[in-house]
Every structure is written in structure tokens, then in C-alpha cells.
Image (tube, one colour):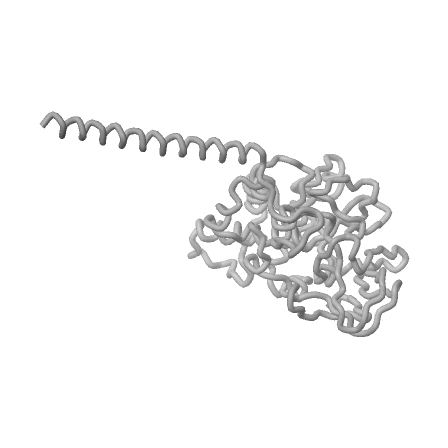
Length: 346
């Protein structure tokens, strides 16, 4: 990150007993201190990635995306940008940054869960929003299977060089087509999980954030750039763990004169203390779906919601089972009475 010009002032990466890897204060910090500076050239965006021109040609970048604005497609463009950088391996300009990010399984995102694990979420809003809900405004992961089929897969078929696993030999014709597609799909899921859990929306005004307790992005997670919104992966910003908005440690800022993104302390911190960002006033269902974790105590909604329809269906099924059980008991009683009558007749 230093080669990209990222500057840390009083913070570093540390480990904590309850939150794991996070941001630690390496000195006493005062309110207003600039803790992190990230040059714009160090962030990953769709237009700034190696696939920038290919995404524009495909309609997922530049003016084409602005004319037909879709929040979901804007996020999809960043997913494909991250995937293309991943496919380049060590040749990517962002290789050191990408290497510091977790594997798909280590993100704990439901996108990396097994079928049996996902079954545990059956009937919850977390699974419904991830797989079924058709809502362009939903943060990732949402409509992932549809976007793989109708957006990502066609893009990769048109640009096969971006679908190869890092280190794969371009002249190797022995790769099984099914294996190659499955590898590309897994890399796509990994990129989707990274964008879902680690990306930022730059340039979103506070007024444009909807007041929805289940899916709010707090203003501290936004950066005012004075222009259109841009989805971006920002080195080191994504190292900070989540806390409820009222307890956040920092605010995010864009210094247009210096072309730099800044993380600024909004309260004092003692040396050794963990420095937190906030991912918004989100309940556990959203935190699990988007980031792969839940909080020990969540003031914005603990647990995962189950819809009224699912509750009614479960109650109906329970009543059905109860009726069947009573019917079986009645049948056994009838058989017992018939046996008694047979015995008396003898």
C-alpha cells in the first residue's frame, strides 16, 4: 500500500479478542486527526480497472451507465472490475491490496456457504433478499445468480482473458470447459462477496440515503466527492470493524485539492484502542447477508427476521401434523375396540 501512496498516521492493523483483525491506535489520537490518506489512484473502480474499456464497451461503464442508471448494475460493474484484477494475479496493479483481502470462505459471506448451511436461513429475510428479492436498490449480495447468468457470464464470454484463474496458461487447451466455468463462477462469487463487504459508495449525499432501519448506510460510510456516485474498493478503509453509528470512531472525507480520500477521527482514542467505522444502522439480518457476521448485541435489530407468511405456514404445518397425530390415535383406538369385540365374540 505504501507504493500506492497510502499513508497511515497513528493507526495500524492489529488483532483483538472479540473482533479479530481490526484497526488499532498506535498512539494517542485527538479528535480531528487525519488517520489515513488514500490517493485516488490507489482505489479500485470500474472505470479505473484493467477492464475499464471492456466494461464501457459492454455498457457497464462511462456514459452508458450514467444514462441508464441502475444501482445494482453499478455494483455489478465493480464486481467485474475486481474479478478482472484478481484474474491477473501478480500482474495486477492492485495485487498487494487484493492479497490482503480474505478468501471467499474467510469472508463468512453466505455466498460461500454450503447448501446445508444456507438451509439454516430458509424462510428468513436474509436469504430472501439474497436470492429472491428483485430490488435494484438492495446492496450486494442480491440477485447474484441472475446477474451471473445475464450479465457477468456474457461479459466474460466476450472477454475470456478476464475469466482465467490467476497463473493459468493461456495456451493450455487441456482445461475442461466445465471446470473453467466453475472456476470463473467461484471467482465471481468471491469478487461479489468482497464488493458486498468491503466497498464504499463515494460521492453519495446524506440526503439521498433512505431512512430504512433494515438497510441504512450511515453518512459516515459515504464520502462526498461533489459529483456522481462511484462504487470503489479503498485500501485500509476496509480494515476497520463495524460498530453502531453513534459509537463510530471516524468520518470519511474527500480532499479534492489533494485528490485524496481521508479517514478523520471524530473522538479521542488511547494508544492500543480499536478504531471503528460504522456500516450503518443495520439489523443482524442485513449484517449477515452483506458482511457475514452478526453483533453480540445489536440495538438496530438482533436475530434474523422471519416473514409473517413463513410463520403462518409453519403454524399451518404444525396444525396439520397435530391433526394427523390425533387421527392416528383415533385409528389405533378403533383398532383396539375392534380387537376387544373380537375377543368377546370368541
